[in-house]
Image (cartoon, rainbow, N blue to C red; front, side, top):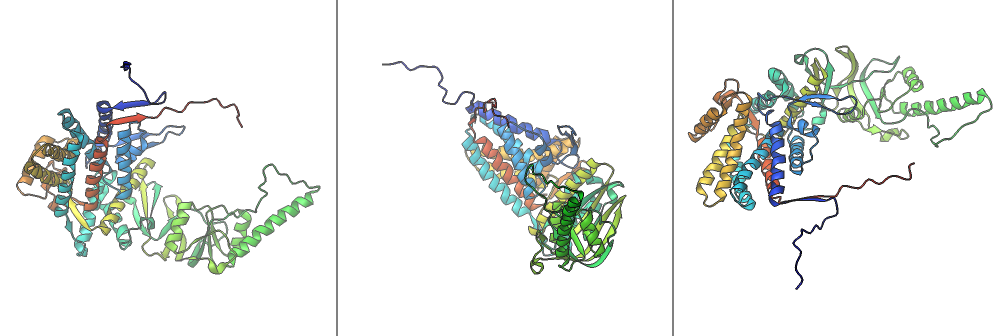
Length: 535
């Protein structure tokens, strides 16, 4: 009988790498926990900011405490860390806020799982316990949710509170009342459609953050052509994406030879004739304002000016798309059938000054809910962070208008969920109860981190908060201005139910997915082959 070799057999291609069982699990846990620790200090109203330095020649500087922005900017190599980064991106796209909370909660769940696995509890047992815990937490959150959707005045107050709570953990915290009003006004103008495309944000250096304001209508950061009307009432607008230069010879390396300068003049006049023909086709639409995505050039601009038409060139693509949306027009590329082209309309187009810049203001647009928020600030970094903060607030408010239920913030919801999960664990026999208790502990870590970031005694505050919830004071949470346990209903610290539910479900699913891993296989790197056929 042939003896079997005891040497390990590798079935993978040379250069491929494999991590098994404990090593794979440890690698996943370490990566995910490291990502959680990275963004942990930005959580809560007293969270700190991070400076992100871009590579390359210009090395851009970003100052932010937005979890999704931080995680997008860092390149991670660990597969479990990538799962958390993707999860925070989804949270940002789905509800706009809670990107840091979701990452920290998933990391804390995995920290607890690491301890349970060290006690020889099987991952599937932990997952089974966590699933039951997630359901219990979700039910508790649903029961605690308040719905003022039918009472317009109270719902508007809820929206203001949600905007304040969202902005209190951002750069705009010192001006949160001012920006909450801007955000709520902008979202209420949408009349429940939730289409944030109609809210345009323009950033202009200069002034202070409090000089920011909401403008009804649409602002385009472009100039009107030379010698053209600077003010038009009852405008008919043709929005186009077309090249206004002549159709030049596009054949690579082609030449045109002429035997006299008169022939060059002939070619030029033929080109001009083509341009003139195109302008005449455009003017047949009966318009008094022409906005093009591409350049218009001097000669067509001159023709538009003599026809008394306002022409605006090189409006960026996002600007053109948004302008088409708010004026009720469509973007055209050909002009042979004027009857098929849908023109945009607005009551007044005029130039306005913001700081030292001239912008074009469209008022009385067809889409009445359109508006522009003009942000002012001292540096570009402040403006960028203000825009991110305001975007988060707008997203959360748009979600709340659709799903009108709200819950209390300041760690109140987390403690409610943790209490429900602990109660379930106390009634559950077997090892699953240990997993449930670990889930409750991870939920309690969020208020702990919020208190730690503010420099308060987290052990004291969280134990007081836990006792208050056991005493059926279900609106108790952390008041971070005083550093005490306060009543969230009285303080108006409110959050969107949709955001909290998404944080709970996303974090539980991501942690469960990482916990299931028992093998990591890395593909062999592609070999570099010398290129013998350079072009």
